[in-house]
Image: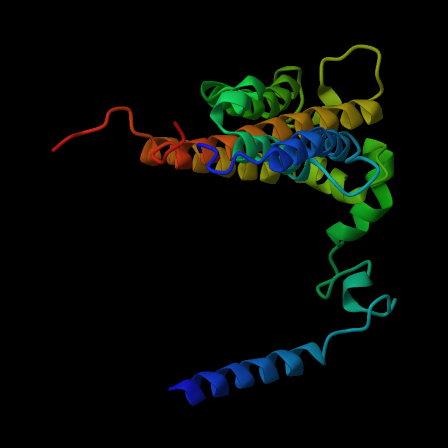
Length: 101
Length: 146
């Protein structure tokens, strides 16, 4: 069983290396993700973000504009998820009265 | 958590380190426009400073910093800051969370969006810090955190 685990891990590593060898190079302007039009010839959202983020929100950090302005409902949902986690720990873990029984 | 090791070195180290962590957390929140950062990361740093004091010095000192019953209202206030920002933009004629319509007079929509991002980052940071401290308090409450 130990050898089977090691074999599965080696196989998985080989799969990841094979998948990573096909990735495009960093900063290559001919990459698919740097095109202005997508494969089906529709405008790409990231292109709009890079070109218009500073004019829309006057913020140099594009990531902040995307998280806080363009996708702010998503961020609101994340905050509600964290709030729900806190409330659930409050409900599950807190004991108001110690029971002797 | 009753301090099982009354080491003055640990208490002094925590007291020395916590204010700087807090200042760095506020820096990360308020400089999210110019450098990597934002509400989540800054809130985690603020919570780390508070939890460092809590773990190192026990309850008697750490409740001077933030009391246990104050964490839940702070989390609610953090979520409500975010929601109220979006709702204020909605009732003045825009979409939900469209900061260009915020009712602040004398600002261009560009700078209104700048301000709106800052307001919601503060709300996110407050909520994250309060909720992390709340989770810690609830988890150690059944233990010897007397």
